[in-house]
Amino acid sequence: MNSEKYITSEIETPAFICDLDIINKTLYFHKEIAEKSGCKILFSLKSFTIIEILKYIQKKLDGFSVSSLFEAKLAKKILTNNQYIHFTTPGIRKDEIEEISQISSHLIFNSLSQYEQYKSLINANTQIGFRINPKFSANIDTRYNPCCLNSKLGIPIKDFVNFIKEKSITNFTGIHFHTNCDSTDFSFLYDTFYLLEKNMKDIFNKIKWINLGGGYLYEGNPNLDIFYNLIKEIKQKYNIEVFIEPGSSIIRNSCFLIANIIDLFEGDNKKIAILDTTINHIPEVFEYNYRLKIHNESFNGNNEYILCGSSCLAGDKFGSYKFDNPLKIGDKIIFENIGSYSIVKANMFNGINLPDFYQYDKINGLNLIKKFNYEDFIEKYE
Ligand SMILES: Cc1ncc(COP(=O)(O)O)c(C=O)c1O
Image (tube, rainbow, N blue to C red; front, side, top):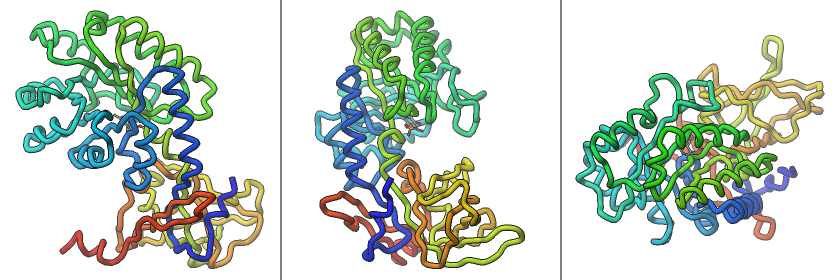
């Protein structure tokens, strides 16, 4: 990928860049999978929320999935009235439920107790659903496995089935599950669906929709036929609408972070490069020990550096990278595939300004969308 095209004399670092040519290609691809499979696609807003870009995303998809009142309001601001807003979170507050219910087309309860607390406050036009926890997932890392022991995410199948039967609940129209993270293996999706089907066939005969969650990577996935066949099968057997709600699959590859090297010195046995960014601009690097891909990295290069962020935290490091040529102060480092969960989680820890946000396309080049400054920093504390 020619990421160097983003480095022009006008760019100030650190900078997030969203490449509209890439996102348009990705959106076109997702539109195609929606057409081929017959599913509806909602963009998961928790992964990315820059409004200028959401306007592009909105045009190609069926709606957004959201997990808080603020995200719901943002979705409402951008979507048209006939697009969907699916809402689910373990954290619904009593003082927010009525507004949430007015905004959401589909409100998905995360627990039975949540449903009992709020059922009388739901707008008559809002479709009610339940998040099911099938206790079956491809993820074994408990930091992001929604099916881990004592999970807070969703209702175990048996509890749900008993509740619906015992209390004769009929005012719900759908179910939701989200059990994966960065998975390319749709066989887990298949197995999860069959597990649900086996244990709640009666319920499938009554509902109008199912939301299969996000966490799957669709673009470039060699197993898409498995996905297409499953969606067709669900629709054919039960005549219900099928939704998916990807975030990363849509936005991850289209964004970059460009940083400048502002200092270089020798460490004990490796060279240290200090960047004008920090891991707090991509907090998942630290949270999940991610190693980001960078432009110009050379696996056999003779010049190795620990790329460090500029905060005072000792662990503010991106990791060790090799290059063909020695780095110089003023060189640019381009982190790739950083679209999801970076900008939404970025913070000004240590008083370090947030990266500017630019969009890029090959006709118009770079366009500054958002610039942050001292006022944004101090506003939070005044
Ligand atoms: C309920 C739910 N749906 C969708 C997503 C989007 O996942 P991804 O960005 O991995 O596609 C998440 C991510 O955490 C989620 O929790």
